[in-house]
Each structure stands twice: as structure tokens, then as C-alpha cells.
Amino acid sequence: MEENKQNEREEIYSQRVRAGKRTYFFDVKSTRSNDYYLTITESKRKFKDDGYVYEKHKIFLYKEDFQKFKDALTETVDHVKTELLPEVDFSQYDVKPEEDAAPDTNTELSWD
Image 1: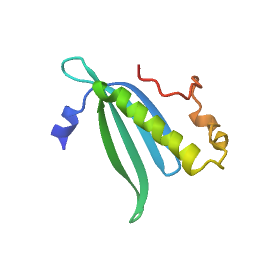
Image 2: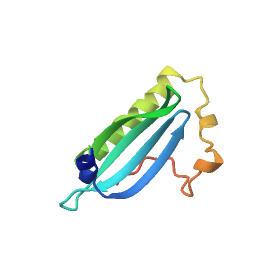
Image 3: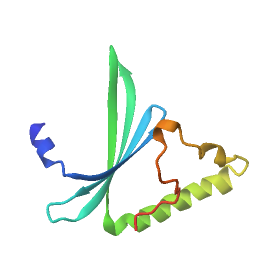
Image 4: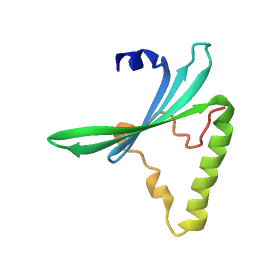
């Protein structure tokens, strides 16, 4: 386990999104050759025995895939909003709770 901790790369930038019992982390890390990649981690809180445990799932995203990932995510969200749930007013979800509000209110994905 200690060896695994040493393999973790330096974190350059981090963004947290709280969503109920789940928290999503968007972390930029560097490689040994000074390149960068993104990890997306879902951390889900679950009750076990006498306390909480956190189940984590992680995706590694490399720079050559940023645009493809962004495009696919945007198209998928747009499909749900316009084709599957056109009657839902998604603007009601645009308001950020005070503790999660970030100074930048730009809602567009931008990894460029």
C-alpha cells in the first residue's frame, strides 16, 4: 500500500463537485516527463458497520483524448436534455450551493 502512495503523481490543480452522497474530483496531475493528464474520481459515501466508508472509481484522461471526451459528454448531456427530458427545466439545477460556489461561473467545459 505504501508503494502505491509513492506512485501517485503530483497534483497540479483540483476541482471538487459535491452531488449528494457522491463527490466528484477533477484533478490535473503531471507525469515524470512533465506532461499532464486528468483524473476524474467518483467518491461515494456508504454506511458500513458502525461508520462510513468511501467507494472510489477513477478515470484517467490523457491530453490527446480531452476534446473527444468533452464532445461526447456535451453531446450526451444535450441528448438527455433535448430528446429524453425536454419537459424538464434544467436551469433549476444551475444554482450552486453557497459552499460549492466558485468564482468562475462559466458552465462550459473548457480544457483547451
